[in-house]
Amino acid sequence: MTIAGIIALLLAVALHVFIFYLESFAWTTRALPVFGMSRESAEQTKEMAYNQGFYNLFLAIIAAAGALAHFAGAPAVGLALMLAGTGSMLAAAAVLFITSPDKRSAAMKQGAFPLLAVLLLTLGAAL
Image (cartoon, rainbow, N blue to C red):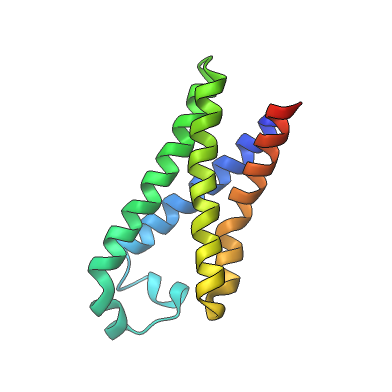
């Protein structure tokens, strides 16, 4: 279960690194159709998006560091970091789902891999 959880975690990491790229470096270009916004709206929110992108990157780094710690022989530290990273990703997706009904589809995409990772990692730790 733990290996399956780490695979889900790595998919969540990849998604959050891609979101980092979109929010921090492609907000006024490639991100427009992804987030369904106008160029004017993107220009007005690009500083906020830049910051948000780094937030997503830091969550990805925490989760990836947990996987590295696990494989380096520190499974307890690894599990704590993996659950902190993916749990925070999942919580952010839940907030988006609850507060923005028009973005529920995006929230489910953002939260699917973290949810799977949290469930599988927790099961793996319990078995």
